[in-house]
Image (cartoon, rainbow, N blue to C red; front, side, top):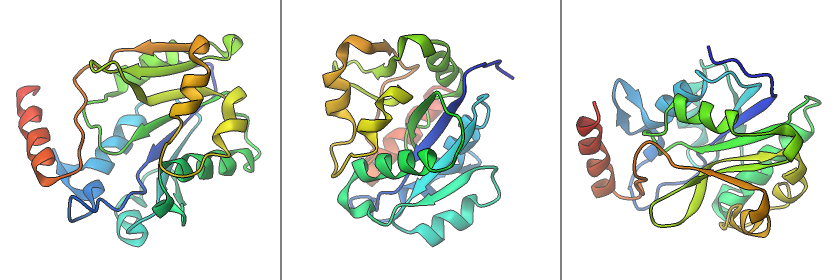
Length: 206
């Protein structure tokens, strides 16, 4: 187990309805389980304080599939308003839980090539004293998820609304950002075609 003296919580964002996919992409088969189960199993390999999974659309169906994992399952009833509400919901839940957290690391349920080694690298790159943000840098010059925020930024995260996510928080605090390059190229997973491409890439990297 990777040693970590920092109190990091991991939040898996998985509340979307997968409208363009035509079915809940969280439950699409991946290896011997599903996309969301694979993500949960990945983050559980990291020595973190707590793991939270934010659901919304298809809550009963998805939660029944992951209920046996040692995680906290959160139900964001405002999921239809966008990703920002899931981020805010999780931060407010953590702030009201009376636990000491130094930072929160957000991951998506549909990035199966993000592995525990990379997440551990993000945690290693986080310095509590520097109040930093550790974000993922993609080849299209975008900075995004997975992303780790020091608790200094919770006051901004807890007020997020709509579908923009935390992009403007990252932009407003560029001086505090440390970026890392993920092990593989990011794939947007919105349609069945995207999923088939993801499956074919999995064979490439076995």
